[in-house]
Picture 1 (cartoon, one colour):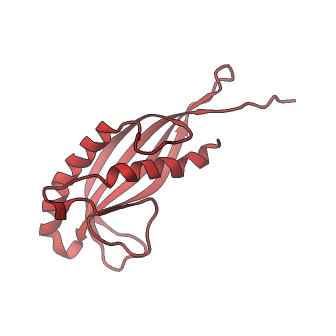
Picture 2 (spheres, rainbow, N blue to C red):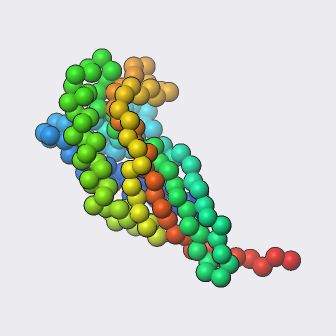
Length: 160
């Protein structure tokens, strides 16, 4: 399967893991995890995933395996910017909860993919204001960079 086809599968698997992220109370837990930016962002807190980039090691013809690392920007939107006290209270435990949850599901085992997911891990997390194109008011949240390492089977065509 071409690499560009595994990206939606990977994001769906990540969304299923994000959807189970809990806060201190049920009200602070993730309500929804979106594979793509929705028209209406609600309810909060929620996750929205954006594909960032992929990096590949050159495959070796002898083994038919392509190793790639796919980077997803996972935004955990916790409150409108006008409610900063609430956002800080909700964001801190969600950060740890999401990192722990991803550590428990490193292979995105919640959703089968057409490639072998070797490991998914949070590379960075940054708290602060988040503006989205379709939103009139900025949000407060956490922007996670998630790296997902995969092995994909490839078929080589002979040249010539």
